Length: 142
Image (cartoon, rainbow, N blue to C red; front, side, top):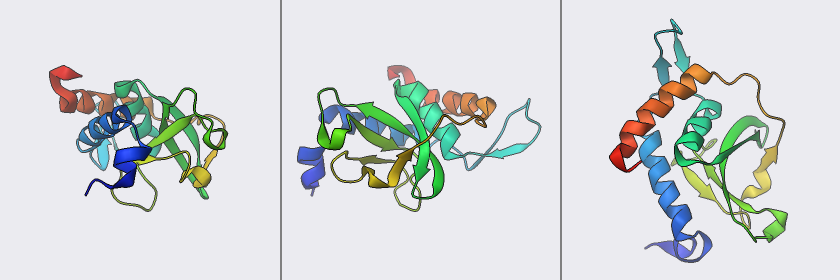
């Protein structure tokens, strides 16, 4: 069964983005070592969202999911005014949920996503390493 959300809530384009994001995130390890870092670094939502955002040309939003520091991607929905939100959340590292990559509708599930100022502790070396992995996952059609 595809369900109501697949048929009526999310656009075909949003669902294509979800499929591509899942393919990308499947290549991400839990920790990553980069030659210039000299250490293993945990892959956090903040870096994962930025890598997926770069690969899929999406904006990244920093904030909170409930009380947890969090980052996610935004799929803009021009002309949408549902609850004054004009985007769908593409959460690539969903907090306390499976699967880890999800679409969240502006009319049903954004109440837990609270905006904040942009983060200043993002490890760009981790982002770049994830982008390289993601490019391979997308292949020549990226």
